[in-house]
Image (cartoon, rainbow, N blue to C red):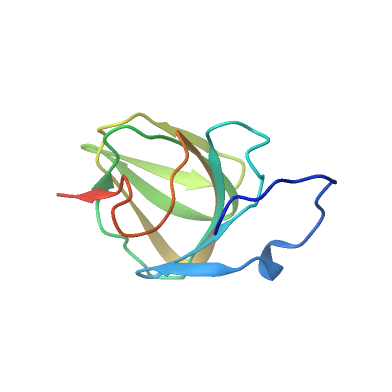
Length: 126
């Protein structure tokens, strides 16, 4: 999604935003037009019984807010149960993955500096 200048307030529904798939992860970028600085805000939907590949970001910090559902976050060697209302702060370099159970999980993630889900992005496996 390209950044465009926002000249008026934006009110929409997440399900109306264009989505990209990153494996099983459905990602919608919330268009801020750069008003919030060098961050990106994404809505992430994890289907039931999903395990995302383990990734890390070399320069990007990730803040995750669990909106609904539940998942297990594997952060380095530690496992944390994450339920609606929980927050995670994942510094650069920390390997992480998310695993859902019988129900889906929806999160809002804030990335700083901004992260695009495109080839060449600061998303590294291994």
